[in-house]
Image (cartoon, rainbow, N blue to C red; front, side, top):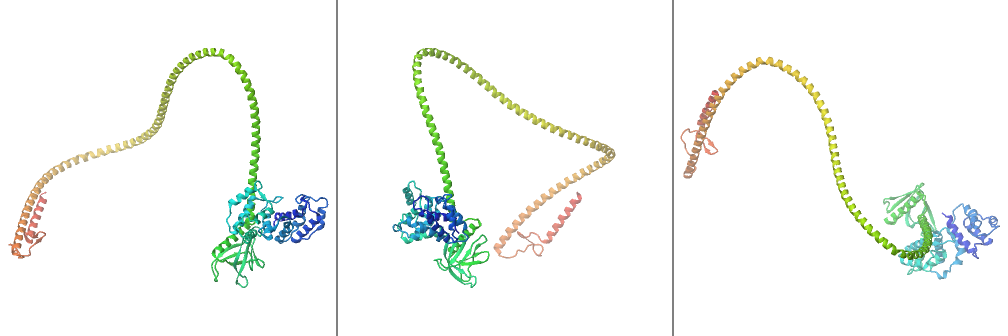
Length: 587
């Protein structure tokens, strides 16, 4: 892929080399030779008649409207139908111009490396003639070259070099070649390292090589794995037999529909990934995981650039740098214009100040004369002023007294105003309370009306109920008399029952006292029995005590043998039940 502006830069170098008198004019035979060589390299037929017709009237410089540039665009560049070897085109233009401008015996680099620096200059130079490279692009190129050589970039050394340039902030192609060839930024490195650094930058910027290296590729027919040298460019991935890139084995054309994906290890191959194109896919094996990830990211970046319609990354970076410089230049021009306006305004102000100074000098002279006249009248005025001052003092005292009086009146007035404001606030609060009371009164009035209506309804209902009660009272009057007689009878029965209940209560109290007396006796008997048993057990051992009475089985309690037998207990229960029943019947 060739770019017209870069080709024109190379032709400009060749044309300038043929301009022996440095007047911007080249003889027709030289132009014919140059045009024939260009047509041969670019694979288009040469038309000498058109050249003669174009320059038959005038022979102006290479960039004039009637000069060689319109002919070059119209009859050569516009007729290019196929891709040609751009490097051969550059070498042809280089051959015409380098011997006249550089002396290789003083340089640390070969002619081949000088040619690469010349190509890099054409790529990074501004699109203005005569061609120069600005200091920012010089720094970009030197930084990339030192990084490629493996040495660190020295900001201090480059800053010192910029100071040496003084006001000159750009270089020609031959000055750049001399800067690199004399080794200002490669001290301590040999020629081979310097050549490798130049070659790497040339490969990236001019040959559009984004990445290169050895990898294994799987064949489409025999399905075998072969080691190839891969070269990645913005629109293709080419693979060669070896790294000299002389025997190409094929191209993988990248477009917007392509994609690259990682593959798992298989068939004994590791670090696999696949590039899927429209017609076929390519399986590739990298040497390690890091190389695999780098290749995948580089290829994905190329595909993304194609989808966004962008050119190669370094060309986009160059456009961004140029845009930034243009913006900075516009800002500087704007700043310079503002400084000019400020300077013009400052000059105007200076002139105004000078005119004002002259006026002040004239005014000073007039003031001196006025001072002399003033001194003459000052003595007369002093007496008048003294009288006026005394009169003013008296007036001032009167005014102060009036002001004091007015101040007192004002203070009283302000106090009255504050009282009125306080009364106003209280009045507002009273009005607000009255308003709220009216609202509450209205609500209560509505509630009272509703209650009156309900009361009227209830009163009607009560009158109906009263009539019904009166009729019911007449009916129940007779029943009341009967109930009164029954109530008297029941009261007499109740009094008899009460007397009987009191008698039973006294009997119950007597029974309880008897029960308590019996309980105390039983307790004393149980205590005596237990004491006696303890003594017998102590003196006679485990001899069973023979008690008088029934010879049956002795009853045992929680405190030992009982004081009476089971038969006696049953008799006592029967007696107690009979006495209980008799008391109940008496009640």
